[in-house]
Image (cartoon, rainbow, N blue to C red; front, side, top):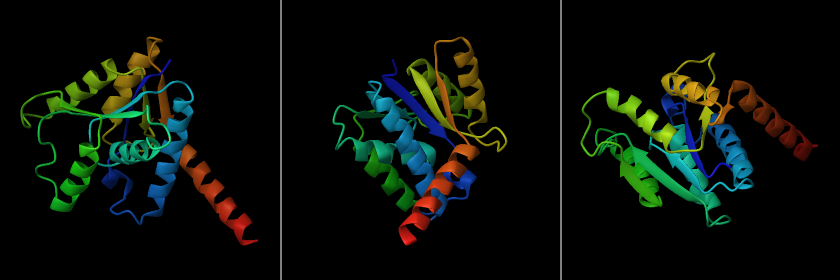
Length: 188
């Protein structure tokens, strides 16, 4: 039973997504929503993110949207350290704070500001140990920041008690093709 799902993946810039108009964003959000809905059928209660820009924040947007239909669904934002957004652009900080303010739970693994990159690895370990499974938007053929988390989650999954779900490039391509087919069908 999957009650607490950790969702993570690429940062927006790693996917070349710099604004809401990027057509790839709609495809990623559709893939995330599809998976979260599938888990909701199996008693999902919490989606947990660390507040990282990109996949995690897009998942948070989806959770906030789905809460209207599934009021029992909750969003937890557990950052690696305090004030992780303080060096971001002002509009990015506003976007982040707007979502975080709507979270059902907000905390930080370390109750201090940034001290070192080690805090990110410790955050991953903490979130893996405080969730029942992970949904990772990551393709091992396109390495990026989720590489370390992917390896940690795979080790945990190999123990047999922690499901690792992935959305990879092939899954996203399939959704893009579905959308093209829908547009074609609507047009003709």
